[in-house]
Image 1 (tube, protein in one colour):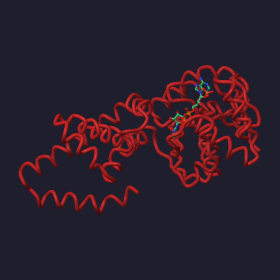
Image 2 (cartoon, rainbow, N blue to C red):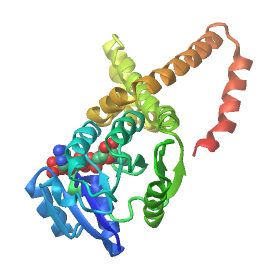
Image 3 (cartoon, rainbow, N blue to C red):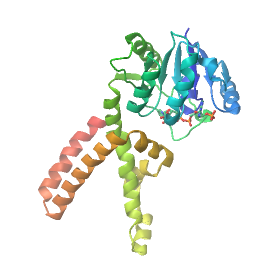
Image 4 (cartoon, rainbow, N blue to C red):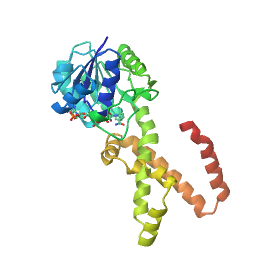
Length: 279
Ligand code: NAP
């Protein structure tokens, strides 16, 4: 049995607690609001819960599950109280800035990103088995102790996640392509449609929109705070992906403008073949 500390008892922290506690680990939770702590106890996500950060400081493995912007400030408060053996990991969706700051504060730190979630948030959104068969990316650097990486990977495997290891920068560029760029592209599609200045056409488009538009606009019509967070914390990688997308769009535009239908069809045929590789 391992003593697990969870800081931030929301969707991800609560879901980790539900599964880790069910595996007989001793789970101590810390959250900002007393009401959230009570609810986590009621839901069986923790053995005990508190708003006092020192309560998790002696745990064997501590997961920081706060919003991204609070990971570093939380680590700064936690580190002076930590037991020397404690391994700290985080679950943030962006890794390079988080890992850089956290490993400077605590040598036994391993960056992580369980790639599972729903559109809901908070302790009441926490789910059992959320991480089953989902990727769990671990981003050790040359400074990360191997034993700490192994411990976090073992816990992730015990959640039945598929564990992948890469550098924080590789992680951030990969999620920029498959998660953050699609949000910006989809949001731009919605915004461009909204700029149609013929009101009749605009209304007609809204009436006629069906499954294709629903699919392509879904991620752009989601939580604005999440989209802002992606851009703010993964700015460099997202800009690189946006540039690649813009170049590609220019190429498509040129093919259409110059009636290069065979070339356009070849591009679309290549995409048709490539798509299954992403899914
Ligand atoms: P969430 O449901 O909003 O949970 C975050 C929790 O952190 C809140 O419930 C809040 O609890 C708590 N919190 C806020 N400030 C705190 C503080 N100063 N000290 C302690 N607890 C604090 O968000 P989430 O979706 O679980 O996201 C948490 C992390 O997981 C983020 O870093 C995110 O990038 C990452 N992540 C999210 C997803 C996803 O799909 N949602 C997927 C993978 C990774 P109170 O109620 O006590 O305020």
